[in-house]
Picture 1 (spheres, rainbow over the protein chains, first blue to last red):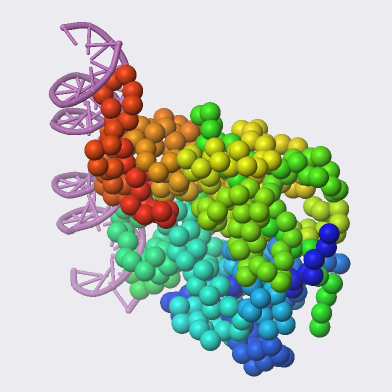
Picture 2: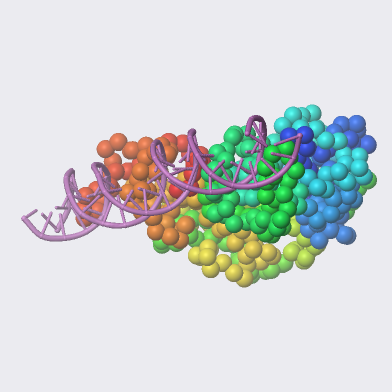
Length: 220
Length: 220
DNA sequence: CGAATAGTGTCTATAAGACACTATATA
DNA sequence: TATATAGTGTCTTATAGACACTATTCG
């Protein structure tokens, strides 16, 4: 028994750190539905070339944003008869993070518009709702993982990392307790000899031991 | 621009507590593909009647299992060209919990087969993998929510609840610390006057203040 | 040297684990 | 009253917060 098939798309919440805030990358839709409206980068799943919806999301990120092999995780699937005027549709939503040291090239080579993620509204389809769900997820993951480190560049100081956690958690963290926890968690290693520039004592630079997300037993 | 549309289905990991273990409900597939093979209850999304994939999952639970309005949350979407021999498909997976006091009626009225969830293997499609993802999610949610209480009946003792947490966490919990935490979390209320039967001092019965999942700030 | 930020040491507060102790039902 | 499980009190231990103190660089 077969049934009429719904539309299946992927959409990606692309986030980066810039100007001290979490920024959302959107594309202006060139055609209907929602022509001229900002929307999440996304597209139809192509059954002839995509191995799964994640591959479809990575294809979209590569083709539309020039972003290769980013951190990209499935968020949830949003569906219904009215979210897309073309008909009953389901969109598998992903969220991707652009590291600080790749943001310049992404900005230079694509039509992506960047705006503070917290102010995202008026997006096409139900994309505002998808962004909100992504922000909630990222807030939660920040409490028990190294996710904020994925927004920073190759190397960073502990002050950089703490500021990133504080930004995503929207609350200040105790500096000495933060250092203690980061040391205990052991997901960073010092970049030997490297130091940061400033008018005062330079800070030690660190990098992640792995390019993967580190999960903690307890909250940060 | 339109593309060939993939198959879109929903599948539900149905779990209940029985005989001191977490049990998975499966249905034997009546027809190809995978005829005669145990599979998760599921089905095609029907664009003419389902308001979204969650409604499709609830329809499946109602029609195939006689389970009305259970706790049912989206797990993830599994997709690809080979997971279903009929073609490129995506399945939005959900997990649902059957409370202990509704298990008997579910068992009586449906063809569901129950087996320990931890031993699930040889299921149709990629359903074994979906079950594993659901068990991982439930394990995680048990550490910071009242999820185990949703597997128990209307009222239960603190010993019942602790056993349920211990079962899902696969580790013993300190009894007095557990009581302290449950009291602090304040998601239970005593059922007045009610007591449990046993050969020794009866225990106070409790029920959840809300039928919703309570989320904790810290780990249990 | 003074300013500024980096990093450490340590005291206090809070929550978890251990476990002895009391409470209350039935046989 | 003996026993079995329910439930409490409290000491110890681990971790987080507060904050003063030392360290290091530059102008």
